[in-house]
Image 1 (spheres, rainbow, N blue to C red):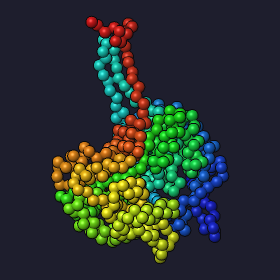
Image 2 (image 1 turned 90 degrees about the horizontal axis):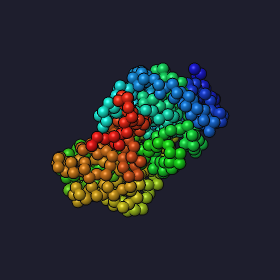
Image 3 (image 1 turned 60 degrees about the vertical axis):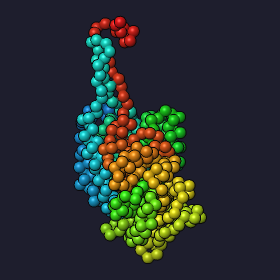
Image 4 (image 1 turned 90 degrees about the vertical axis):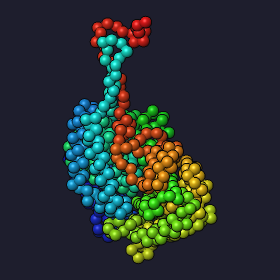
Length: 510
């Protein structure tokens, strides 16, 4: 196997590792000859790595490799496929700290969170390894004598994964592990901001003995390789986690070729706090939900809907806690919140601060860029809280994807649920209450794919379906059996051992 990296001179003679594409079991340079830099958002002077800026030829080579590999891989018994996943998961466990530190360097979130990201990939690996012996299908009684009926799962073929930068190992694991245990082969395009974490993940699969061509990596920019991936006639499915705008483009392109398409898109997630809630617990949840991963989660708690009886106390205590959060380089174990992923995201965050001010929302804390001293070379801003936000304001309706949270007052549970549902998204939701009746009413009435009781809107577990309603996606789910459902086709099988022609409903006895 060719080496995965080489060293290139940068600037004044310092060097950075150059990472290659992974196609047909080999680490290869892009046929374009172009490359791009992966820089640390906490200190942009650091180049984490240099990656291939791929084009159509690279995409076609990767898809061709996956197509060839599928002929043999689909015939490998699912338990044997699962054993490779299990070995790869054990390797990830051994490399957890190394992978976590690489992820913090390229993505920025604090080290305790990147350890959790890698652990989520590990959890997914163990779960999906078990699915290798649970590819169950129904056997049912036939309506005719001497006839056997059942349904079996079959793989789709070549699957394309387009993954985001905010969970650069966990989300690829949600897509790759179920796809390959089901017998598919894959081409993955990682986000250009975080390709190293995907390389670390796929390297574990390769080191575990995954046959060549089963998983292929092509790095680069969506504008250059997204179209060729979706237009390739050999692709049978595409799974995207990204923005709603990009999801619409991918969904339309997939529909033209009748490609199976899974879209996990945006969110504007509400957390309801009622008067009877445990406020200490709710404030802890609000801080974690709003500012974990610098608010850069599709499940981030971006709206906190407060019953009026506790509005003032909750607001005061939340603002005090938000002001005390330590912002900085995520490799520092004492830091609570890292940087935005890049300059563009920081600009968006700050633009929404101005939008909130112009809408007459009350700025309670934060709202400013941090750019002096240790912050001088990174994309940092203060944790930001807006109060007295109206449900119709843009900061209460549009996904910001940054450390900006809006507080909205509500009269009672019914009013809070109406505010929560008054949105085009429907990914995650939460309610804090000690009243079991109100909790169950919220579980029933909140329009979301996920609802938490007395917990924030973040923290999904890998063995349950993950996804949302409305413009959050197109109905498919990741995690658990939802993932196996997406990456397999059902085939109904009938075995007639009557030794005569039976014409189904026509031969039904009177």
